[in-house]
Length: 99
Image (cartoon, rainbow, N blue to C red; front, side, top):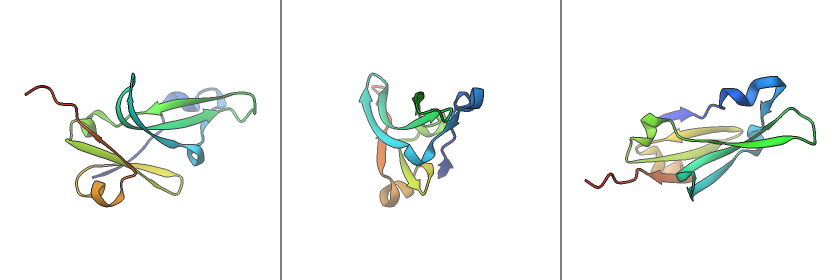
């Protein structure tokens, strides 16, 4: 399954825009939880102000055993299934629930 990564709505508020050309993979494993996830810079075009948000896999993909991310030009896609083996640049695994 391939699902295009979408920017959170707040990245477009007040004239802001996401900078997909500078998005990058974060493998996770910090206080933000297991990865991978995408770090997406956004701003209003002014050189003084820019922020970075984390874009996490949708819940339906996090329920899969594994998921991954791949970049195609300035677009990013979440992957599951066989696509992960051949294309993913970052792969995450669902945490065990102890069962």
